[in-house]
Image (cartoon, rainbow, N blue to C red; front, side, top):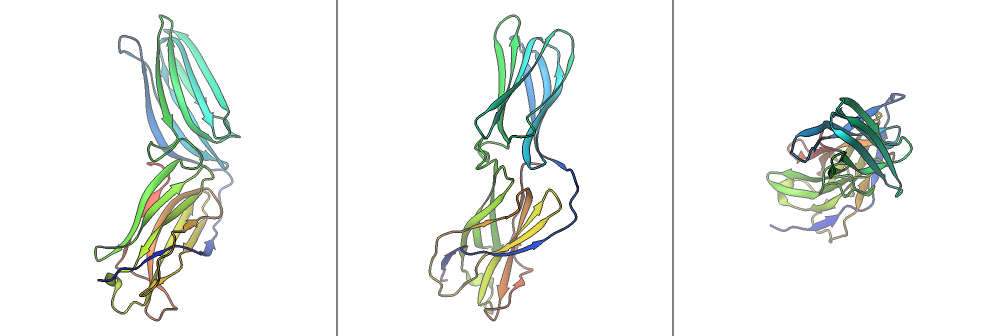
Length: 258
């Protein structure tokens, strides 16, 4: 069975617009935060939500602080700056709500309990989960994607998410006869769904029998604030007109774990 590798190069772009809400907050990741005394007793217990709001990646720490000492939250931003929030208590329960700046993209954060009796306990996180997140705006999440038909992988690659929030789907098209004996060419369609209600479709160039290998390209959404991506296979029996192949299976991925 002959296989020919072709990269996803120039893109064909179709955008579909919907009415967008004036203000939207989309939580895409939640981490549990627990800080303890030197004896192993919980002194702070809560969670940190990573969310997207008004074009920015932000995070919020909430929970109950009932230790004896100071709780510090440090937010690290993509521009190299940082922000510190703190609260002191001496055994009296304090409800905590610390939020990163609304004008910068947060990429990682750490929370420290400084005990009156001495010593500290610290928990650190990336926006998104390591190693899918690198703690930078270039990659706050990453998903493996593919399109298959009859157990043959016709497209394999990744979707990377940036602070923008922009989806970048890239990989390799591989010709396989499993696509069907009457099919002359096929291509990949990526549909990005946006936090604001926008939907955008991108199509790769097509691949056919006898095509030469080419470098992998990137199917990058244009408007930012992408929340999810779904992949489809489109096939052509005449080399010109394409339809969605209902027997193929494409990945469906989204920013974060929620």
